[in-house]
Length: 356
Ligand SMILES: *Cc1c(COP(=O)(O)O)cnc(C)c1O
Image (cartoon, rainbow, N blue to C red):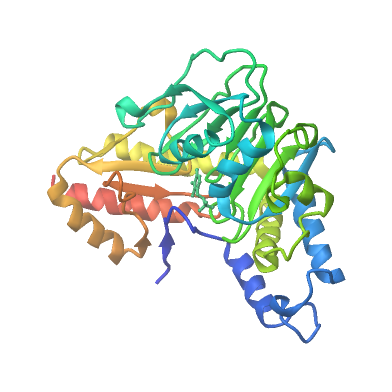
């Protein structure tokens, strides 16, 4: 039976990407060796890295003002690298607190800058995205979590300010068009919409780096990785390969604009059912709903077990909400086909009919 992968991350990848990755795991490009056992200085690997970078540039139409890096340490390492590289200790950075991941980013940023909390939706358990807050002058940057994977909210309008935006886009990068020129730094762990865990995509405006007074450890300095094309030390080649294949898949399927349409179609299908099915309700403000991670509950949680077993019977996996919020979460990243969402919707209708 076909499985429908709604896991939040690590998450669904296109079948064609996994097939190519499986081949490369055994033998790459007729070399008689696996991609996992060849030098990161070899022509084959340099080509993979260059292609991965070029795909990112093409998808976001990036100018040469930006560097594209494939680092390690996950988005979680960018929480401190961002502040370490873009602000000095006495300088101010602005943060919008929209959930678990933002809170972690703020904690780390405070170690390397004076992180000012510009707004927070904590008092309503992060069920909305704050808007209309003031941004004071003189911030080195303003940090936003574009999509809140745990709570199911997504930033739809980018705040207007003089400071460059820095964004953790781990769970919605390449899912829609963005005004790239507003951003000084974009980062994303690869395991949601980019590729395979092990690499972290970093897009950074080159003029913002190399300006700090502090002595940044070599491996944590963006300058190091810009100068060495992400190969100062041994990069996670296999993750970058899967990432390259997945980015190519996005390009071949029409790029971010086409992904946006595809994702909106899937999301409106599911939210339409959540809103019309009397057994269910959404958990966030409608205006701020994420197209990537839909969070919802059964009004009568005595039905939870029955719903989960119906899902399992239909091949639906990974639908349980994050352990910190409960309920249900359907993650619908780029690679998810519409038929998976249709399957989920039909299970929700089935449950309704059984209890009508
Ligand atoms: C998953 C996730 C992270 C954590 O990423 P790691 O690569 O595991 O460090 C950070 N931010 C957001 C928005 C996420 O969804």
